[in-house]
Length: 207
Image (cartoon, rainbow, N blue to C red; front, top):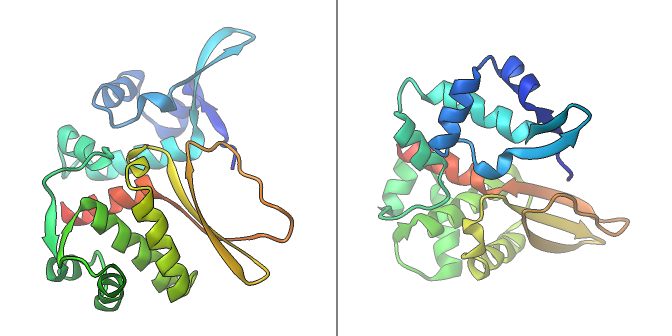
C-alpha cells in the first residue's frame, strides 16, 4: 500500500491551482501538514505529496468551495467532531444509513437510538460494507468490534479499515499511518476503507 508521490510543481500544473492557493488551503488545514513531504533531490530540497490523496482532496475543495466557506470545509475535513448528535430516524432521512443496517447495528450494540459522531462512523462503515456485499453479517459484527475497541486511534488522520479472508476465515485490521502492508500467501483483501474519507462523506451529508 505504498503511496505514489507527486512533486509540488507537477501538482500545481495537474490540478490547475496556484502556489498561493495551495498554501492558503494548508494554513486552513484543508490539506494536512503531514502531506507536505520534504525530500532531497539533485536540485536540493523539494516538496512532494501523496498523489492520490492530494488530488482527491483538491477535487473536493474545488467542487464544494462554491457552497461552503473555507472554515466550513476545514470542519468537514477535520477528524475531530464534537456536538453532533442525531437520532436513528434522522440518519435514515439524511441517507447516511438504511433502516435494515441501523437496526442490525442497534441489535448488535444494544445502545441508544441517539448517535454521536463515533457511532455514526461505525454504522456508516457497516452500511458501505454490507450494502456492497463485500462482507456478511458475522463479519459486520467483527468490524464493529474493531471500530469500537480502537475508537481513540480512529481520530488519526491516516487510518484504514481492512477486511481479509483466507481459507474461509475472516480477519479485520485497523491500519494507522501504514505505508505498506504485506499478507501471507493466499490471503484475499476483501475490503479496504479509508476512515477519514468515510468521515468526510458523513459530514458532507450532514451539511
